[in-house]
Length: 149
Image (cartoon, rainbow, N blue to C red; front, side, top):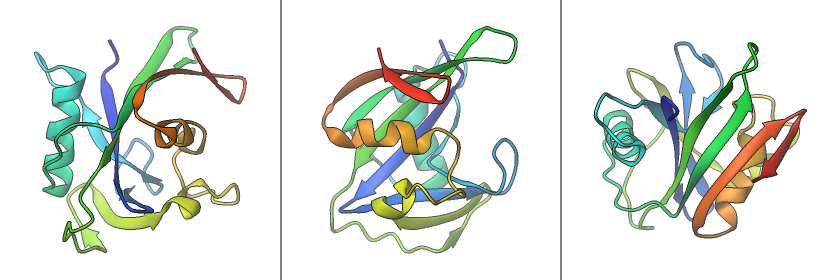
């Protein structure tokens, strides 16, 4: 079991992103999320983190998965990833400062642009898989490539 979640909230062609103010990945844009608490499932942790960091209550994920990789010491590490779709009528004003950083809606094209170096590592490789369609995915990052396993 991995320790962390990252969650992307989609509204039409925009994704709610967080520019983190503290480590890890301080200063880059990523989804919201965090550490799974004791006696909490990854799904429960993801829902809690979305609410804590945004105040948004999401119901069910659209797609989810795991992204894994080998750590520097050769052990398997990874994260649980979620994509939630919200109602087009959601009123959530951004540029919004939170205790974690700055929340802002970013277009999917902006997030996935290959020239965008301000996005957290690997996001541009696994987010397109989550956006393709409903499902549960297992992805593994190896030698710069994201493989569906």
